[in-house]
Every structure is written in C-alpha cells, then in structure tokens.
Image (tube, rainbow, N blue to C red; front, side, top):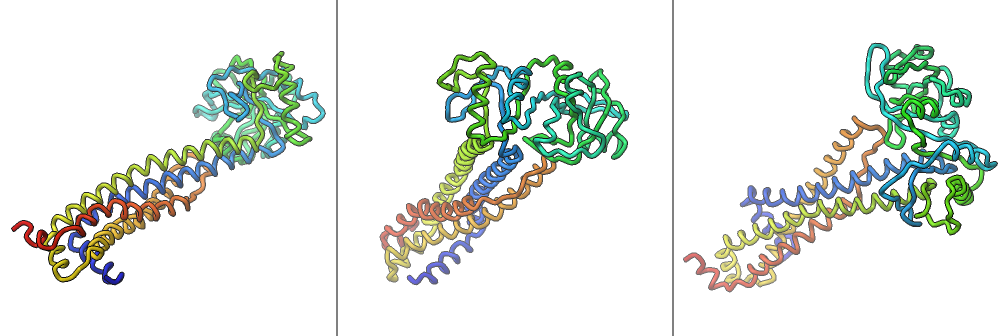
Length: 410
C-alpha cells in the first residue's frame, strides 16, 4: 500500500471514532506537556540560580559555617556556626584581601509610618557596598565607625523607604525593629534579587548591632574579595581559618574543618550537578504519564482490532497483505501519538510560560525558557510510544486469518 493511501486510510478510520481518538490522544498530550513543563521549569530555575551566583563576583570567595563532607564539594547536613569576629579581623590583615564582610540575617517586625510588617534584617559591614556595587540613593551607608560603636544606624532598601516615607523623605526618620528604635541614615538604590532575597525589601544595620540585638555570636557567612587569583586565595584562606580555629588539619581534609570556602566557579559546578539531577528526576516522574498514555493507546487499538475484525477479513480476502494490515494499524497509532505529541508540546510550552508568569509575581529575575531537549524528547517519545504500544494490536490484526475474521460474531 502506498504511503499516501496508508495515511489517508488511517486518518479516515480515526475520524470515524473521533471521540475515542481524542480521549486516547489526551493521555499523550498530558504526558508530553508534563515533560515539557518539568524540563522547562527546571531549566529556568537553573538559569535563575546561576544568575544569582554570577552576581557574586568572580574575584570573591564565600565562607560558610560547617565542613564539607568531602573534596567533591558536598556540604554536611548538620551545621554548627563557627564564623566569628576574630576570623574577620584575622583575614582583614592579609595584604591580598581587598575587602571583607561578615553578615548576619534575622527576621523582625518593622514599624514605621504607622504601618508594621515582618522584614529581613541584614547585619553587615561597609565593604558590602563596595564588593557588590550597591548604590546609595539618599544619605550614606554606615561606616566602620558605626560598626565599631554598635550604632543604631539603619539603611533601608528602596521599596521599604518608598512605601513607608516616600522617596526623598526617609533619611533622618526613625523606625522600630521589635521594641528598639533606629535612625535612618541612608536609602539604597534599586538592587533587585540576590540569592533568592529581594534586597529592596530589607533593612541594613551594622553587623555588631544585629549581633547584640539578637544575641548572635557568629556570622551567617563571610565574603572575601581577593586581589590575587582565587586558586591561590582559597587555600590561603583555609589555612588562616584552621589556625584561627585551632584545627589540627595539615592534610587539608575538608571533613575535619568547621567551615568551608567556595568560589563562584565551584558554586556553579555544584548547582549544575544538583539541577541536572533534579531535571532528570522531574522528567522521569513526568514520563510516567507517557507510559500511562501508551498503555491507553494499546488498549484502544486492541478494541479497534476487535471491532474491525470483519473489515480486516474482507480486506485480506480482496488481496491485502499482512504487511498492509500491520502498517495501517501502526499508522493509526503513530498518528494518534504524534498528533498528541504536537498538541502536548504546544500545551506544555504554554503551561511553562504561565508558570513563569506566576513565579514572577512572587520573585523577580526568572526568565521563560523552553527546553529544546524536552521538545525533542516529546517528538521522539510520542513516535516511539505509537510504534511500541501500537505494534502488538497491529500484529494481532495482521495475523488474523481472512475466513476466521469474516465468520467473527456470526
């Protein structure tokens, strides 16, 4: 049978049972859409995380509490805070350290302008502005004098200043965090999102003030800007920290440390590994829908074979070969799955775009990104599903003896 005739015959057959055909395609549509959605969201999340890491300068090291599990960069599950002011002062003396900060994060109730809301409070240091390129829109960012004197000076994120005081009116005003009052000395320009936090919705205080207020003894993390290559700076920082913490670790076994130092390159590598595993996991879960859809197609094709036994017998009696019958039923299965794949790709693309728009209402910085591997996988898998799950019922139809088929249901 010619290919055009084969496709036309299969198409006509599916149209005769269009309701059942649509329901059969639905399983493939849902399966492909789920794969596209999972992979696209995973890709968008990966790009978002990498963009956040990229905002952490390529000449900077991040130091966090707790050891690595091993030299592959995996972090331990249980973290004890160990980064202290003495570490900051020791590292600050190094000639290769251009800038260094220690930071503490806390949530508290902000009261200002007759309004109240919970906000993130960041205890930080003056070098934070230089290292991250922050711009001060009004007033000034606190200096080392405010840090050393444990001053109650506050700097507001752009959105907070605008909401509570209006632009140009915040400097010199007082705010309350919990029960304590602070004087606003500056307002930052718009900064956007970094490390999943909206910097424009935060209150910045001297780190010593925050440690006093919330009874903190250790930093949440430290950042170091280096004047030498990070490949040289990182081992130097690790040696200094081991000396500062009195750690007997001459072999440099990361599991024996109570801190860990990460560069941008290492962070990107770790994120790539984690997101890669998550993408595979999400795709595998979504692919279960394709398996269910394929089983549905096989069942429908078996029903179709049973209903059309007389038709098959008549065609064979008129000279149709076994290959012709096999190819027709395979063509019907492939048309169903490929058609479902095309619709599923379009539907999955729309769902991925819609999901990103919803995420953007809660967090800026995400970008819609359709997974090309997901689209390719959709086409390939939908075709394979048609071939694999359509083959058994198609072979059954092709093996029917014409006389037995014509006598069926007599």
